[in-house]
Image (cartoon, rainbow, N blue to C red; front, side, top):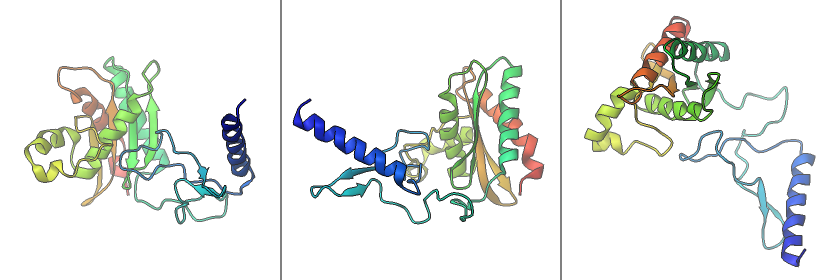
Length: 214
């Protein structure tokens, strides 16, 4: 092992040891509009020219997992865990009954995942595409199929599209009163029109819980 390899190995061991020894860990969601919560994360830190550990990314205020007894990390409005799981399951089951294996994702008003379910035999990537569709429905406060029709015709709307969105059919906003508190997306169903069947299943998930949303 040469000197460079030895230094890299030692640095890796140092970072791993510090992470294990710390009483808290970094927030596990990249703060980038190009990232989803399950995307590959940056390293927890790196050594600067003085050999000191520099957190990467910087520790966000209130963004540490400190264990029980601390305030919640997110207070964003959205469906409860139980309702989110119920909606996602209804979407998956509806598509399964039609012969499609999909993934379904429910997000809150901050765009954070509340539930992600994958049908038996389905490609696991579908839940991430479903989340990107859900982010579209959340951003534009409309079904993602409607957004896919309007966005290409409007420079103003197009400017609001971020790289983590997928502007195609398949997602529905979750609305309470006049406020959008989240969205549900589905992906994986076939069809001549992208997302048409996905959106049927998302609508089924929404219908399952909409009267109980708060």
